[in-house]
Image (cartoon, rainbow, N blue to C red; front, side):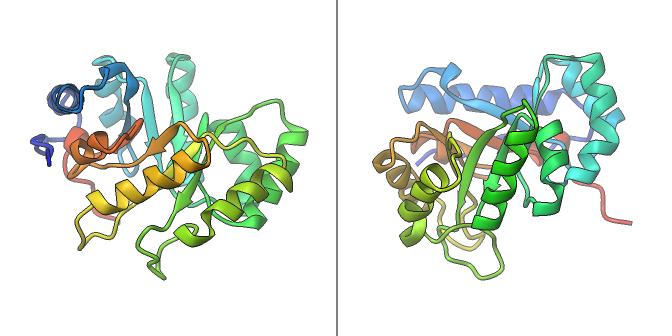
Length: 233
């Protein structure tokens, strides 16, 4: 199974982006897929605007953040300068941050519980914006991770649609760190297929090529583009 050869570069170096783009193109060719079928989400969490700017200048337009408050602090100015940027929330979303998330993000990858579905449904009634929604599947059923258990996924997706009136674009998963990712990607793809979902957010810096082989439409790559993340203060 293919693996990514992109190595972490220093922050603000567009060379990391070029290496990742090369590896995505190669993985798509190996999987006999069109490169255009895979969206690269450059995960800019913890990096400041001055580290993000060179990656934008190199042509990247889709970015991912983990926290609403961090994104609010740095992205409005960048997005004003580059209106074609799409911003994805790939981390957990608290229900009380739903209003801000809907206003700022173009996609939310972490729909994972009825209370959040209810909050999103109410916010969609107030705002004209409709971010794409992905349901997070906890494929390893890890207690410390958010996400819907695979056995509950079909029922939850039906509730999203029938109870809360939400349109779900796809699924997201984060495999356990100590397990091979391929079975988790395959499981997520099966759940998506039987529920008629076309989009799969799966694969990060270490395993995005494997994810592409299993049908990923969105890969979330941070360190291979930006380098080692700054340590928290």
